[in-house]
Length: 186
Image (cartoon, rainbow, N blue to C red; front, side):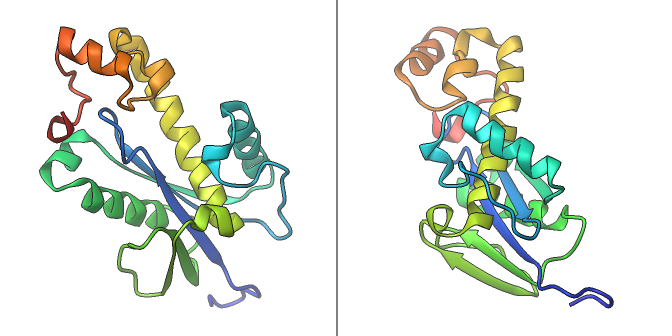
C-alpha cells in the first residue's frame, strides 16, 4: 500500500473488440469507489447500449478510477490480437491515477505486472470490478466506432461496431478495406 492510504486497491481489467474486423482493441481498468453498486453492473454482453452507458455515467459520477488502453489495427497486424490485447491492458492499468495493489483480469491471460495479478475465466460475470472494466472498454470502443462511421459510412460501424456481420463483409467485398481494418483478420 502507498503511504497514507488505508484501503487495498483492486483494479478490474477487461477488453472490447477482440473479434472485430475493424477498429482498435480497447482495454479498461477500473478501481471501483467504496460501496459502488448499480442495477446494471454485470457482464457487458448482457446489457443494451443504454444500460452500459448508464453504468459508465454512474462510474464517472461516483469518481471511479478509470484507465484506458488502446491498440489499433496496425498493432494487431504487427503482432497478433492476444499481444495487442495484453498491451492495451497494460496501458489501461498504467493510465490509472493510482497504482492498484492487485489487478484482476478477465480471461486466462494477463500482462505481467510487478504487483498481484489474478486471472478469472468469465471474470466479467463474477467480479464487479471486471464487469465495470468491460463496460468502460465497450462504451469507449463503441463511441469511437460510431465516430469513425461518420468518415466511413459504407461499413455501417454505427451498427456493427466493426464486428464481422454479413453487411460489413459485403461492404468489404465491394469497397475493400479502410485504414481502420485489421488486414490480418480479412
